[in-house]
Length: 145
Image (cartoon, rainbow, N blue to C red; front, side, top):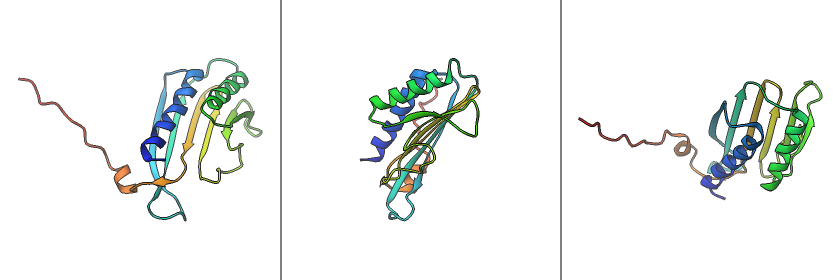
């Protein structure tokens, strides 16, 4: 798996989530982090996306629909209510509060009537942490007279 594949995978998960919960209001905060204890040349993508605002519809039903969409992507997630947060559901692979998978990955969405937060932590892949987190150059077209 390459860093580009990891980035595309996170975007697929976000797309599936938006298909159920809606397009508007999402802000993303992606970054690369080092894989602790797994060698200095290994990195993980931490992709956090949130939406502050109302979630329209029955949360239990929407959570199940997100889990089904993720199943189509090969993610074995299940939806369940968060015990200490009434009115909040979590869709998670691995199961909620079980940590990350053996490869270090985690896919989790918490959704309530006023907040949705998606966290995707990729498996460890080869990459240069400094290069991946440096701003990418943008091409600015010359000004027109």
